[in-house]
Amino acid sequence: MKIAFSTSGDGINAPLDSRFGRAPKFLIFDLESGAFEVIDNEKNLNAAQGAGIQSAETVVRSGAKAIVTGHCGPNAFRALRAAGIKILSTDAATVTEALEQYKAGKLVEAASADVEGHW
Image (tube, rainbow, N blue to C red):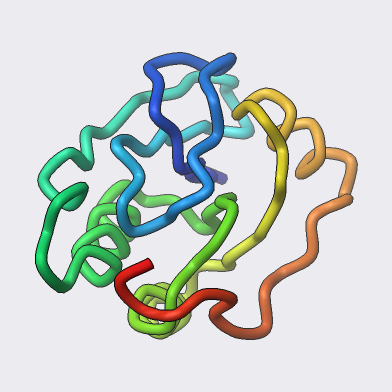
């Protein structure tokens, strides 16, 4: 299974970005192989609107079945949920820390968006 992380860096020890829709990158980690890839999301950093939905589409195309992030707005939340992707919130400082929390079963699936749109 693949899991996505919102990040501002290029590796597993990169900082976790607390913003889903406006995260500069997504790290897609394959839990079975331990391999990962980084997908650029720079186009959505300064988008006037639609950043969350476009970011959700990027995660869906990656094949990830879950996203670990700090916060998720309402439009992105609905788009991710409609695609069957679990949204997991964390305040972890790095992707590695968030991954460890996920593997330990310490992350809970979000029941709703936790910030307003355009956050």
